[in-house]
Amino acid sequence: MLIRYAHISEPPNGPWEIGHDAPLYVWLYNEGATADRLLGAETTIARSVDIVTGDGDERGPVEVPPEKLVELEEDRPHLLLRGLKEEMRGGDYAWVTLRFERAGEVALQMHAQLPTYVGEDATDTPGLTPPSPGE
Image (cartoon, rainbow, N blue to C red; front, top):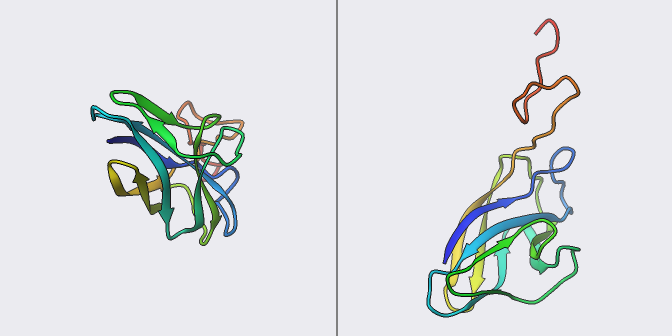
C-alpha cells in the first residue's frame, strides 16, 4: 500500500483547538493484486479517528481496489480526528496509525498543513503577506 499526501487539514482561522474535529486527508494506492480496505485509524492526539463521507457523516471502511488510486480528500470520504486532545497549529506533526484489512497497521507522522491565508495586500507567494511599514 502506497500512502501519499497524508496530512491534517490546515487550521481555518488559527490553530485547531482542544475539542475541535480536524479533517485528515490521504491518498492510497494499492500495489497488490487483491483489494484491501482501510478499516480505520488511531492517534493519541484525538479522542477517535472516524472515516466519514464528504458531508461529515460516519461511514464504513473504504475499499482500495488493486492498482487504483483512492483519494480521501475534502468533499469525498476522508478521515476525521474527533475531539482533539491538544492544540494543533499548521506545521505541527502527529503520529497516526492507519489500519488496513490486508496490509495491517501502518504508523506515520502526519503534519497539519501550513495555512495559506493571505492579506489583501499579499505578495504573489501563497501564505505570505508583505511586511508592515517600518519592519
